[in-house]
Length: 92
Image (cartoon, rainbow, N blue to C red):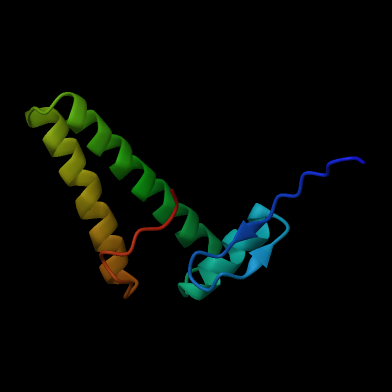
């Protein structure tokens, strides 16, 4: 008997399953009423915010706090501009 590995991607909003990451991202962007470019930009902003938070956790100083605040403000501004909930996080 051969074991077969199956990977599928799940929409974090509705739970629908997809065969490819691209299909899943396109669906999630649609769920948020964003185009793919906007969705990818939001994902990159949130990743930068997480990285800045990690840096701040390691070395909490004025520079790391400013960096984290900068990305937090950018994420919040994007979410407010696109009428998205400010506290919901996407992409992990």
